[in-house]
Amino acid sequence: MDGPEPYGRPPRVDGITTVDVGREIEVHRLAVAGGEAAIARDIGDRLGRVLLPRSRFAEAHAIATATLTLGPNASALYDRGWARQATGWPRPALEDYQPALDLYRQAGDRASEAATLASIGLVHNRLGDQRQALNYYHQALDLYRQAGDRAGEATTFNSIGLVHNRLGDRRQALNYYHQALPTLQEIGDRAGEAVALNNIGLVHNRLGDRRQALNYYHQALPTLQEIGDRAGEAVALNNIGGVYTRLGDQRQALEHYQQALLIQLEVGDRAGEAVTLNNIGGVYNTLGDQRQALEHYQQALLIRLEVGDRAGEAVTLNNIGHLYYVLGDRQQALDYYHQALPTLREIGDRFGEAITRHNLVMIHRADGNLALAAAELERVVDLERQVEHPNLTNHTALLEQVRHELAQTDTVT
Image 1: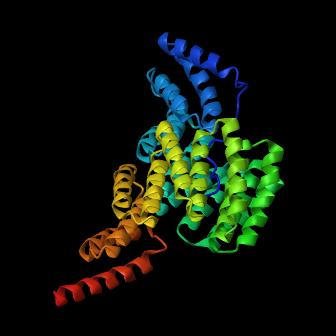
Image 2 (image 1 turned 90 degrees about the horizontal axis):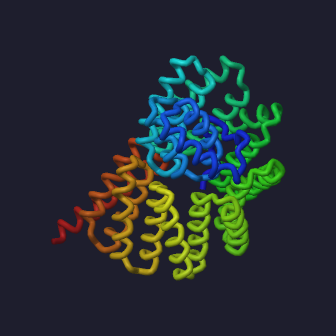
Image 3 (image 1 turned 180 degrees about the vertical axis):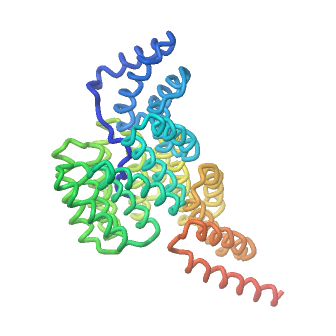
């Protein structure tokens, strides 16, 4: 699982405690009903900064939408875009971010313009359009540099590093992370420092250097604990669990996932809870306890359906499909993979679609359906070419191999 990528506008709590939220929501409702636009926008903005970091996306979406009934408002559009992006609706998120960007530009609000550009970059990265993501991140970077905003500059370095990591260019990713880290340390941005350390750990994990990955994750963890970032602490624990999974130490992995889950239950991070349940399911699957694995996957799926996390929903459907594939129930596996595909196409996740179609290839090939396998592989290669996927070369070679096998079969028959 990737480390936390910072959103453009740093979440902050503007004097609203957990106890106050319900009252503020009611005041907002009355302001909207009474047509009090200024009050509704002010309270809506403050609520967004509380609800979004706590993964209360449905509430934040509803409040922003209600605010927008009183007319265009950049902050409400931004908040709704964030909620949509976080719950797996990237294209509707762009439909909110773009007018928010226009309004911030009209108002001359360069800081919010930069934050929105970075958020648009984030969406394009998750859609698999890395070149567009880099374009928006570099626009944001220019604005941060012009304003002398070193924190924004360092945060954007982190984001650019994530794009290069996804493109498979680990060295370039590390280059950007290591540009971000000293700046964040110098300006005392402990939260940003933890994000950079976490992302460096992520790259080392992908490079196969598990010990270095653990070293960076263990530097991030106490920082997150010191600043009281409980959700970030859970992410770091999840990442440490992921390293132990790859090291084959499932007991240690499970222990860290369980710690993460307790924190997520405590802070009400439903989206994070689903991620951890999904990871626990993976551990049980590796241990051969498919019943427990399926139980945790199903719990994760229910939460993802509840919070509207379309991208996460597709991931869990894929995992359930793989579980059935391991059990030898290929038809059930196909059913779950085919459930994931429409969601992936709908949200525009070409990376995820390529993975799911590759899973279908494995089943069709195992069943001897080489024509279907070749047809799916053609789609996989096309998708991977679009997103510059690191596996493109290998899967192109596999396509040629399957075509050769198919031709030999046709010759024999």
